[in-house]
Image 1 (cartoon, one colour):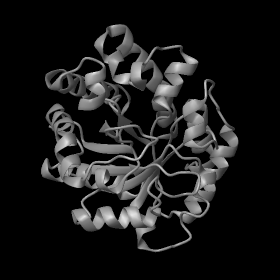
Image 2 (spheres, rainbow, N blue to C red; image 1 turned 90 degrees about the vertical axis):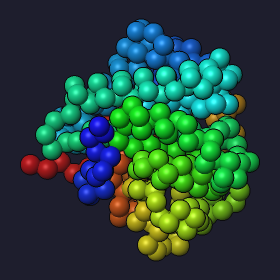
Image 3 (tube, helix red, strand yellow; image 1 turned 30 degrees about the vertical axis):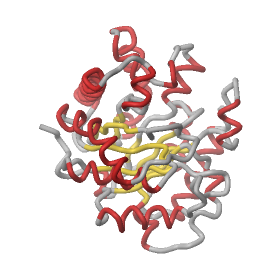
Image 4 (tube, rainbow, N blue to C red; image 1 turned 45 degrees about the vertical axis):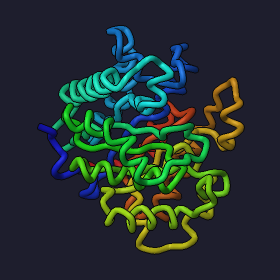
Length: 315
């Protein structure tokens, strides 16, 4: 039985942390080979599973020191049918690996969760295609495509699911509908371009309001990931109730565009202290922002800087 599925604690107003750029940390800092940028392949061996545990521990120790809750996202951003097929996984293989990923997060929760600081296990869903390119699925196709992975997460005991690095409104709607059908709380996380818009040119407001309209407001909340705060300068000029739907941010370390990052052979780590200050500024514009972490190029140093800058220390 999932611990928090019926009542997600991050909806109550408390601050939560999450991790940083898993794949970029493993590849560039630890020299791990991740074919197709897929971290789920590490789940196949005890050595790989220990690498994933070791990756998470600095973040979890930070949360413990600060008495903060944590959102534990599974290493399954690529564990869908199209990417799985490239790596030799059929439907049964993906079901197995998605369930194993949840089991690993449940074990870390058992080790690190403390009273008053809940740790939520979230099944991570990536886009069908490339997170830097616009998807072409309609909402019905997306609902059916992503349902199997969500069903695996539900059966394994995850508290919720989250669709990350989504570039198109239709795929986001499909994920949200599939989660609703399977009675799983869902977060939708869009990625934006340097102009603060989706790849199709839609504003963030248009995207959030379209998903809510098409799903009866079923997502528990929205997030942003794989975007630098600098690129959000104009995203919130149109104020309104829609901004209160954004609870989480996992920013990139780099100010480079997605095209530049895609072609880069080195890691742009940016400036952790500057990133932390930018989170402070965004929290002034996004009153509900409370789930704080990182994306490409970030590691525990960045999330520590974000936490120290943006989360007040309480006695």
